[in-house]
Length: 256
Ligand SMILES: C[S@@+](CC[C@H](N)C(=O)[O-])C[C@H]1O[C@@H](n2cnc3c(N)ncnc32)[C@H](O)[C@@H]1O
Image 1: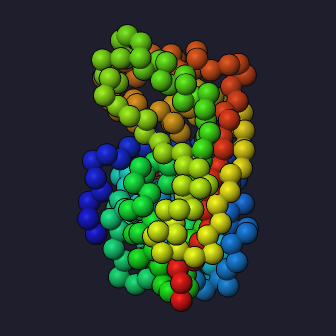
Image 2 (image 1 turned 90 degrees about the horizontal axis):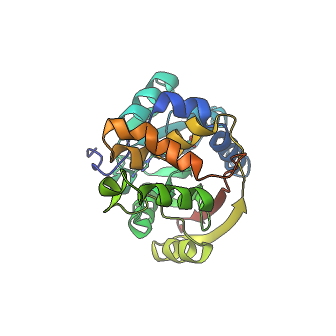
């Protein structure tokens, strides 16, 4: 398996594990509507700390999971948590090549971190057996709009601006129309995409925002500017901090 590209964020896996109740709940909803026999081979694309992978494994008493992530810290945490119950792979899902095709590709809170959706969907299509299904959720059009503005405003001010001058927003929040088009072009059928507002009021807003959203921006700052940048972003958010998440649900099938 190829080494993940250098564009990825090396997440703070310990903190993410602690603050990711919203992502865990959303993943549960995706899994609840996914019909499973219990004996499938499933790819968890962007498994993070393996917390959601464990939930997936509960639905697969006779099945198997391949859990892939690009962040070394996430892979280490997932390996520790899953302790051999799933095959954990350090890889960029865009470049994934599997020995055997899977029955299901599942993914939660990952695709918006990957800008090239046509390439991503082609790869996932190739990873599926004929008739296999894709069931995913990620950030969609309008996701965390107020946070995006606060990050942009902080990043255009001194002393952060010189380090953030050339960076693009790390997320791609697609509309249902764009996602549907890319999935159909990649070869999927029975495609369904829909948006769902999911506002979140985190218990520990600073840790939540820093870990779940700012990794990409913080990695581009010298260490002494990282905490001040988190402060600057938090000052740009209205109190109490409620993040206006909008999730993009994705379902599709590789034709028989
Ligand atoms: C918000 S976390 C979601 C983790 C987990 N699925 C969950 O629901 O808690 C996003 C994850 O996507 C992973 N990721 C982002 N881009 C990736 C890529 N190109 N290939 C593999 N993993 C990727 C990150 O490393 C991170 O672990």
